[in-house]
Image 1 (cartoon, rainbow, N blue to C red):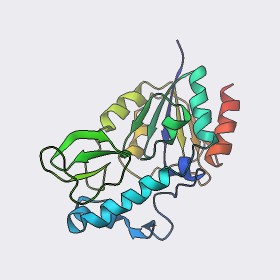
Image 2: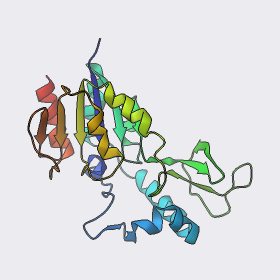
Image 3: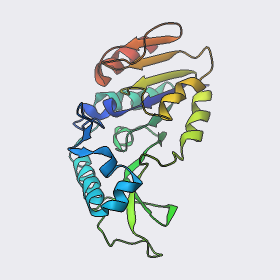
Image 4: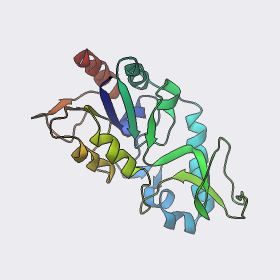
Length: 225
């Protein structure tokens, strides 16, 4: 039976593909206060601004490609069972060839009804004010905003509990509940943490690789071999 590698990825995973990290040093996301564009309150105040913001993110996604780190993780499936748990809303893991991806914070290429959170559909075009579901409710991006529940977190906890190896790439370990997933692996499960500015230190079962996603993943594969 193949060993099970669980990989938790954050914004640093896609940064080298040209997708800006979630928040710049000034606390803004693409020039906007995050609460304007990533909260139910922001959507209630100015739905058109929020829809246009995600329309631009969706358009940007069409212009970027998976980087070498995405491709390396997909190649690991030749030798391991690999589950990706990502905080990213892009589809670069899937486009690189990863077959088992859990999106904690939603997906840019999906929409849902404001009247029914389970009414989720694939979507590649713009979402405009006045675009309605079959029951007459406004459509919105299928994104988990601040203050909203994270539907996939229980699934992610179970996956981490089953991990033989945990790999964390490109995340500050500051956003909860995703950051808590490290606590659900078995006590003897080795953990590899790849980030150029690591938030935790090597020691015990934790090995820190203080490099970018692409460089760090190359090093990780050498270690796993």
